[in-house]
Image 1: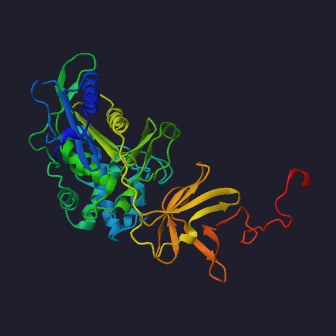
Image 2 (image 1 turned 135 degrees about the horizontal axis):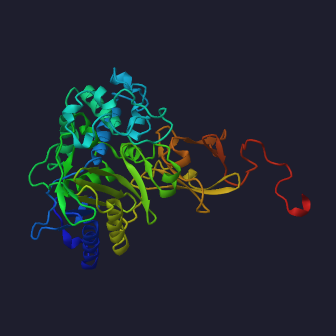
Image 3 (image 1 turned 90 degrees about the horizontal axis):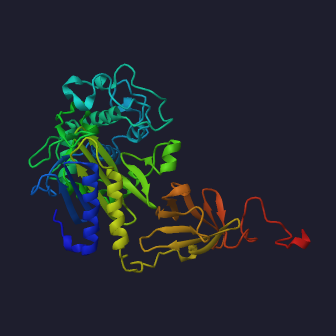
Length: 463
C-alpha cells in the first residue's frame, strides 16, 4: 500500500509526527510505527526509533497479539453467513467433546461464556505451544469461572475454541483457512503466523533504567487464533478499511455492522469509561468519538488498530516493547488530529436514482403520542426515523420488499415497521413493533390503542 503523504497538509503531518515522537520518547519504546487511513487509503505513515537511520516503514512486521481475535471472528461470521452455524448454537453441536460445549458461539465471540481468562499451568504467552497440544490442555479441569452469558470476562481460551471450530467446519488448519479466506482476498501479503523479514525484535525495557532485554519468541500452538499473528501498518491499514466498509469477498457491510454492535454486558467501570465488547471487536470512546477495533500485546510487542466509522478514519500503532506507551490513546489522538485539522468533506447530495416506487406518503411528520418524529426517505433506499427534539429513539429501516421495513439500530433494531391502511388504501397510522405513530398527536381519525378523549384537547380552566 502506498503512502501519499501529500494528501495531508504539512501542519497536520507535523502534528502527527509530534504525537508519535512524544509517545516513543515518553513510552521508552525501541521503535514505534503508525499509520492513518482515510477513505480506505493510507494518508500518513510515520515512525520513530532508537536506532539512527533504521526507521521502520509500512512493510516491517510487528507481532499484533489479540488483534488476531478480530481475524478469527471474521472467519466465524463467514461460517454463519454461509449457513454452516448459528451464533446461538452451542459449541457442542459443531465441536463435540470439549469441556466448554454448553457455551454458545456468540458467547465465545463476545467473551461472555464464563471461561477463564488464561490457560491453566505455565504462562502460555511465555512457554511453547507444544505444552498445550490438546483443547483439554487449554481449558484445564475448571474452565468456567462464571455462568455462561452473565458477564463480560475476557477469555483467550475462548478464541482457541473458535479457532478449533473453524478448523472442524472447514476441514483445514486455522492458518490455512485464514490465508485463503481473509488474507489473500484483502491483499494482506505481509500478515503471517510466523515472522517474515523484515520484522522487529521484541524487547523488555527496564522500568527504572534505560536498558533493554530481548524477549523470547514462542509459537503459541493451539492458542494461535487468540494472538499469533504478525503484521504491518500497511496490511493493517487495509484491514481497517475493510472493517469500516466491508468487502463482499470476505464479509458484507451488514455483517460487519453486526460485529461492531456491543454484545457483552458491561461492568460499571466499563460503562463509565465508554468501553464495550462486540463480536471480536472492542468499542471505546475518547474525546466524544466512538472507536471500533482491537488492541494486542505479547511479550515484546504492543499493538492497536482503531477506526472511527463516522469520520471514515482509522489509525494503527505498533511498538516492540512489553510495556510502554498507551497505544489506544496515541491512536485516538492521531484520528482526532486529522479529523479536527482536516474535517471530512461529505459526498455531494444526490437524489434517488429511481423515484417511481418511493413511498412518499410515509415521509414527513409523525407522532408517537405527543412525541414528534420525522420520517425521511434517503437516497440509499432506507427510511430514517428521527425525533424532532433531537433527543429520543432513532433508527434507520431497510425495506423487506413486501411493504414492511426492519429497524437497523438502537431500540428499534430488528423491529418491524408497517403502514396500516384504511379500506380506501390511504395510510391510517404506522405500526412500529405495536407502537402507533399518527399524523397528529392522538389523531382522532386513527386507531390509537386506549382511545382518544371525546372532549378533545383543553386548557387548564376546563380540567
